Length: 467
Ligand code: SF4
Image (cartoon, rainbow, N blue to C red; front, side):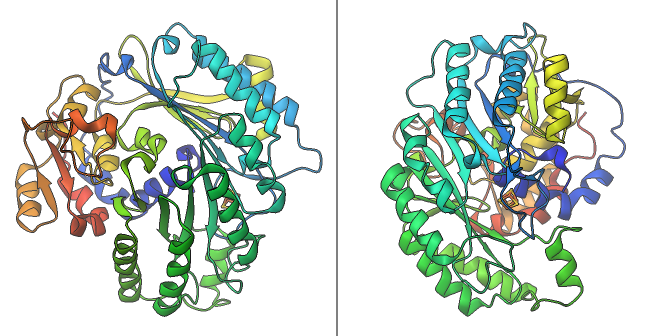
């Protein structure tokens, strides 16, 4: 992967899927927009923001993974990492050009790597630091941590919940013992089920989610149907279900290319697997709200991931973390952390932050990202949101009206204008509570059919220039 885009595994997979399928088309479409104009996003500077914290260590390396991760050292530098994270947090939170202490904190996400390998006291200390800097956290803030179903991590769940973590995202990936080693996972199905039961008991149905991957080497439709049925029988109110992405350079990619593993199903069978996911999750009461995400209730949807999908600001703390941050002067920045933990910590110690580079976003990039990520959700791209984040532009300014019209006629997109409904009571289930008024400002959004082929839709609808 390109670690510059690492934020969370959910966001990453969305972004990587887009990059893989569409980069060429979008670059070509935008090739004549090379002027370095920066957007005035002064309105965005007062909006809520999120915090992503990257813990870079894992017990082992999964064969399909190209995240910015490193094997957990025998004596992990927990104290040093914590101190570096606090310094970088202080840099962002206290810098006058960002004004973050006056803004609302939307969510906190501990990703990795494997943040549940960090001592609970370290996680607590980071939450306390954020709490102190912000002058208190609001009572309904979402605090998520990613983890794996190993016994040492599961033994920490209760303590993590006690210190305020209220959402757990477990990497389960498969419930077949013969497939887990192919993915390089160091747990078995029994561990996975035990972990899910513990997660449910401690975090409740609303507070835990887990990832599953289909389309693995040798994974047939029949096997996947049985596996998903079992997964759904344990699920709470949320699941993330991905099709395997073979990332170039990973051990899994090399083994598949070398013919050392059973082949991956063909496109038709993969499409059947995806369709089965849609049907089976719906039968189980989970609605589809983003390409790879399913929830039983609006409250169970990942609020943090909506930060990315809605184009909100977020700061990235830790090695290789990146962010999007609007300065008080209205200029929006992309930030990129130094990748290697050792170099990142050393830079924090020397300079007070581990930032590798900080680049103002070009005029075209903000609308482009709003379209890319917004259309991956059923919420789509709310018109008012688009306007707020682009200094008053209209959504139509960025999109090709003729192409949108055609997709609407083919039942792939819905183009809705402003609605005067009673916005408090009638929003569809896939609209998060804090997006209801945006939804009724009018949206362009995918239908279920459109979501299945969104990667082919997105590059076609962007205007070649954003003028
Ligand atoms: S645990 Fe997660 S971050 Fe670590 S190697 Fe596996 S997939 Fe990658």
